[in-house]
Length: 194
Image (tube, rainbow, N blue to C red; front, top):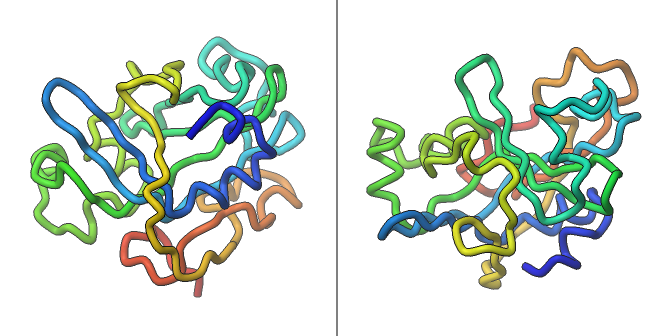
């Protein structure tokens, strides 16, 4: 995907990423997965977005504009992969919540210590562990060779939306706003809507 794609409005990017392929290349390995679930976080007014907590060194990449990776650690042990969107100094990003594994599955299995393919990348912490994504990816460009998103014209049945997962700390309307997008028929989606 080119820079113009990432500079679009965050909601548009979040929905458009469904069906695209996340690719990570390291050493002699290629790991890839079809993106099946995302969440949008938009600006400092969004009380679920890290930008609402004030500009800090730990999340400064949110202000750098579309096409940059923002990785943060949650619960002191899980890395979260975000794709920064929109223009410079407007802190917005898309959290990649789940992918369907395509290439490098044997390495993902080793990284996750599980052979349950349906559980391999069906959540944001699961996919970063499977892909070997850590803090060293923070600030990298998606236009480089190590990590990028490409369009392989993979089929997507139907895209649904729902409220975001794990943001109960945020005040309304941010807690309930439907800025989560997912491929409805995917076995790799992290959470099903009841």
